[in-house]
Length: 173
Image 1 (cartoon, rainbow, N blue to C red):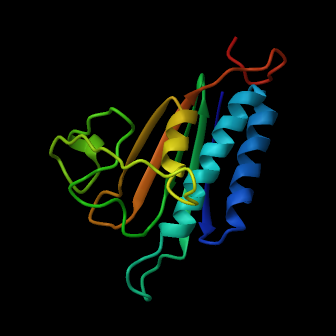
Image 2 (spheres, rainbow, N blue to C red):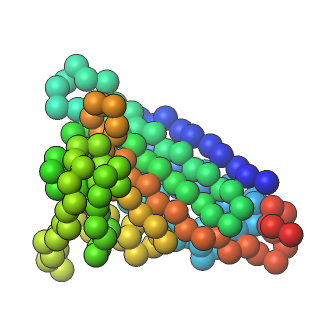
């Protein structure tokens, strides 16, 4: 059995806990291990917070007051995608997970060249700049890119192998 849901949320701080609670409720009802659910909920919160903070359009008349969260719980994997309509990641330098090489479609919509992006370290006292790294640590597979088709916006997608509680109603048998 699989579960799929998608939300279109306003770019407001109050939308972040809403998305997190929906994910946690879905995972609990399905019977996902609480540690896996927690990791995914923290990663989702970070991705949503980035969409709220950075997901606005460059011009005031652009329709950028919303972002989309989509979650799939299918078999042994949970996949989450957060897409906004902001400026996206800088062109020519796709932000990829630590040590990863971005090529072709994996490099995002803005580039097809191979690139290894080194990210500057974040000072211990900084209040920003840790969210994408946190997502990398909490998820099994991560992709940071830009929306395709000439539309502006960033897409953060990540997945994690699911561990089930012994009494899970949706666990594979």
